[in-house]
Image (cartoon, rainbow, N blue to C red; front, side, top):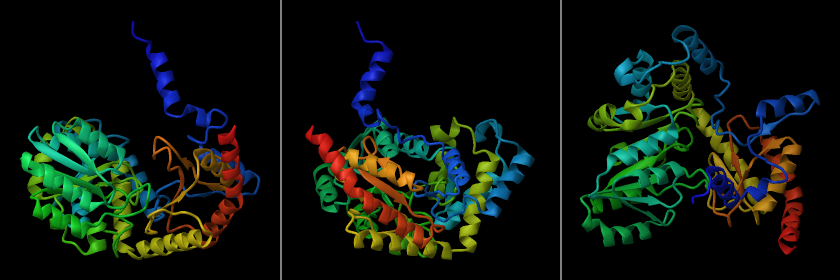
Length: 405
């Protein structure tokens, strides 16, 4: 007889690391309530947990645009765009997104996670192959598993490994898609796009770049990995992005050749069978995009803040892994218990930096992940790191003692 669903859930929850949060759960913090409670005590909160890279989430233009659309068009479009019709705003947003990244056309979906899953599951056939960086986002991994083709990871940013896999396997498949990220969200490093373009052309592959964290952060005007490396956008077959990071809204988008986007508009399951973006959601994303176009210096401010963080972390002897110092920087620590302990101590000091442990990263690579914003003050960056280093020894000792028991 099979176990009950409840027994199954309890068992899997334990395997996922339930013991780590048995004494104190650091996740799902009501951030607004936390901020209010500290303000009542005359204290502040500085968050490094949110990917508001350009500091636009409270920008008056962005907030007002959302308000206006909520008042005029309501909270939902109440149908898929294909069968229920769309709003003019949808077309405006997609046209401007495509122009911004340098593609011919774009398509928006209600979830960034859904965008990768549905695209990868839909794009390839049983005669095809997907090769993806092993540190790609979970949505990419799930999408490759849902696809009807073979898929294999290659070692993170190891293009020699990618070449070896292509040499061994490419000839057995009709089509091959290489998938990477622009800025990797857990390590803060970037893919070598010029060399990826060379490999793609040598082996007759397609190239997809997930720019969720790199649009708004990389490139002189925030246009992403192609601008960062001065690579022609036409050399990348598919750009996938999100509306929830630099564009402080919600949803995802795909950008590429007009014919490809036209095909997806009529056939992509996650688009055809899902509701369209809410008017207020689309409006806030479009407004944020327009602010970025008007004020490209925001990306330079973000880079300066990020590099200040990286310099300070390195000065204090902290392990930042391979991070290049733009937007996201991890602080790698000795154990999961150390990460949990130091995260709590930072929170008590008014710095919100949730722990990153399994399932988000391998068990042996726990970390604190800092998202840097253009709104962060240099003094807050420095003080948060000083607070961390003053408490890190305690966290390490606690972990060592717990492991010795």
